[in-house]
Image 1: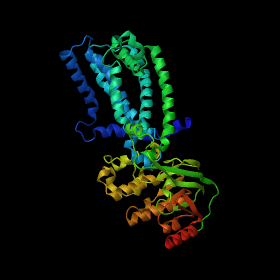
Image 2: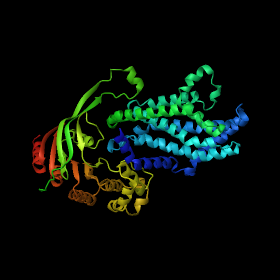
Image 3: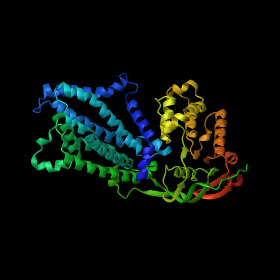
Image 4: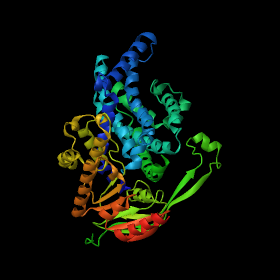
Length: 258
Length: 250
């Protein structure tokens, strides 16, 4: 297994090139080009602010910000998994013709989305200040929260990418699943509004703890729940290990199944 | 053409078997797999049956045989694109495969950008690519086109760039599958010259070819595959002669 990880590391140049290809090719040929990376979250922000400040007023203070700090990391998770599901099948011709550690393909999708998320912070931070939400020390926990989320995202993306080779409709099933998962995670609502008898069930959702942690550090200005974060982090590490093993086992036949 | 062969081993193929499942109607969806559980009739097809092969370092080996004899499957197993059903392959050194030239090129990127992309897919890091960049550009003979998007390239230019990148990886082991049939005559000559140069440098080369003449010309050894088994192996001349006689009579 360590040998496998070393081999993936040896192909880091390929990983890097695929990520930049992904980021550049997405907006290549459009007039605004790379600025679309910022336009998407900005537009999203304007629409939400308008709707939730004037149309559908919420009891939560600064609801658009409350939503925005959770929605951005959720989008990182969900678009990685959705795009990652197709990453092997879409590159079938490459897989059939060249040897390289196949993990590079789904991982490049995760990294590209991670960079997109980090760039969207350049919109989020000024917006927070504009809404007079103060940036506080707990923001120092951000790298840790991001790391935990990234391990979770990488694990799931590896699993769905190789699963999709064998079951092509997995891609569509995941689409439905992600919608359900979205509403079961406190993105649009606060975790406090979950009824007490359902709390146990909700706490099994790793994404819930991660999203809560983002909201704590960005919006509430408090330190995240360390204990929950520790459990989720350990769980994600175990899941990551399992995903690598499963990927390694199933990837052997993809060149002929694809 | 007799050459000294060093004794060290580059590739060892040990009792390799490869089974493909041929589905009459391949079902990819989860729904269909559950609904038609067990009804998915598949036939097993053994593409390779117990191949044993030892390839010394620095030698050039030609794989010949008719269509469907398992040549390409064997090459793909050695390059780790496919995994053997049984048996194992031991490899000593970095492998570069020329199955398709310019695999992974992005049409919107320039030739230069694609060199970086393609070479990294073949396993080079940034420093190694930069060291080879000038040689690759010179070899591909693209002139100013190197900074144009490759979608504007003719198919010949595309192939030239792909070949240039692949042979400059400086792999210890080079696997070639019928790609020498590309480009115009002048470029073909250049490719052959490059292969001879790599031979002199001690690169181990495995060549899949339909043309016995090419195998005779380039290879030390030849392996004749027929229906997944080795029918003959040995000196390139003798094996290709036997193969030509077989083809002529059959």
